Image (tube, helix red, strand yellow):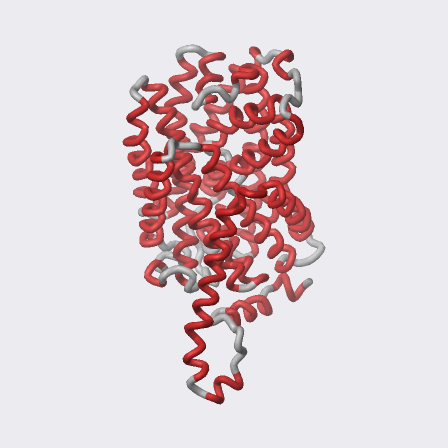
Length: 456
């Protein structure tokens, strides 16, 4: 695990802005419409269900990040509790799997821009790649600069949500909530899977936890504020989306724009279109801070090429890891455009990896947090709920399973590589464990030194 003795420069304001952007983000631009399309008015129940999950999940991540600030984030906690192979899989799920959400951000931003500027949709291809550049440039300057940029962007995001909800409520009609369950409980389950995208993001703070000036105080407070803001925003938006648009909620590619046109013709679409582009940049900005730190941390632990390790330390800028992330983003975005830009498929790939991360992280949390504390109880609840989401994800877990196999393959390759060196000396052959991973011993040592384990 990467050591982070120094502290960064993030305070509560910047940290809260990064949390809100990573959780609220572009989900509000598309998910109310998609969820209403698959579940009808009962999509409101899906929002409530995921909010319930988010409370113990966010609380557990806050407890972990405050107690063990480390750029490896969830992968570091899994390494403490479950060993290096599980940690490697967790890191791959985030670095390669969660990155499937990047083309969703870019395509959404492009769709909104073309709609508001009334330009040909053929421009989406150019805009997708243009949108990727600014957030990467900002993160190349370091997480502190990114934090202040995020403060401005998050302010605009919250303002537009307040505007749309306030303008839409007078137009809500009770008749549009009937029938309440047009697609049965199966539709509600699908909507829950979609809304995992909306409330995925709490793990982002674990990767930048070492950049906070006072993690023990700032991270729990930033998490609590972000939880209230994001929960209310999604719930109120889902209510007004169903109550105003009814059966047409999922008909368009830009549902929030359709809602704004219905309640505030003229000004509404202009405001939503402009802010949508800013929101996309803001979400990328917050996630890239996590991608960069995680990539550098994985490299420092030998799970990625060690040439990517610079910048893992607190205050460091992981430029090499960010460049690799840019390459991944370009590949995924190209695939998305060539396959017609099916957002739902990429969202489900993203969320299936997120659910895998959450399940592994919550199981690890129950093992390393001090037992019978508030954080430990939340971890137990979140672990049960996360396992339930795993079962709900079903076949969508295939990408996460492939990444887990890649992690296992790395372990097998390491062991095979060690075999000739072990066989070269009879004494070493006798003393060495035949199935020891090269970094398993450090991992076990870490567990013994963990305060949570000794106190449990």
